[in-house]
Image 1: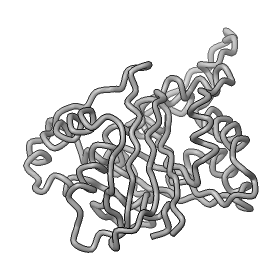
Image 2 (image 1 turned 180 degrees about the vertical axis):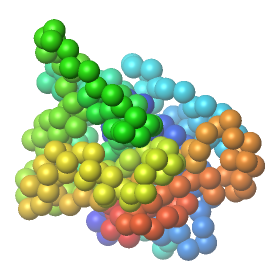
Image 3 (image 1 turned 135 degrees about the horizontal axis):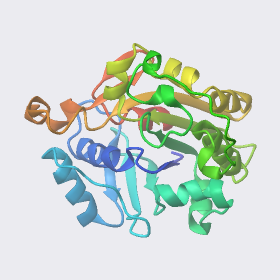
Length: 276
């Protein structure tokens, strides 16, 4: 059976570490009919055990500091114990990932992982780090007031709209991928519990409304690229909510939405990427 390589990446503070903790817990505590199981885990077991324990106990996981990334490789198998692929959380920080846009430079080891990958799980946070997109903040757009100032503002990279940054990053990453390879991308909109409180949109429509440039670009690559949109809250809500922490088993906190279907299965993006 052919195995596939999934690479997980995204901008800083986009929810990758929380997702990793929830995913590892789920893989270690699978449902009876789960189509994906963990075969083995490479690299830093102590780090994984620590973030899983903090996630189970409802403790903040914190951000991963630049230069202190723990590369993680999860080797996966199907229900028949056949190896089906590897999910790689590379040793690159969100800040370094954004440097692809700022400095047009890419870590050599990360570039090689992109070349070898068959699919990507890409994280986008709907609230934090958005530039020039006020509608993405947790307030209604009607509550904004705008004032036109006569003083010109000099352009800088920090003023670039986030969806422009994301689109350019994808363009650069696709240069590393064989154009004859069929490539799958799972776009994960994290902190979906926050989005759900604000708007009655499924992840695909949210993506279409707020990131139209990126969507149009991905649509234009339909000769070799297919993508799917998932709304995920791997944390499930605010950590200071006592009812959240009481939920048992812990994986029942998780919210995963795809095509208007809601589940608690954090493995869903991987199941789609691996074609299970």
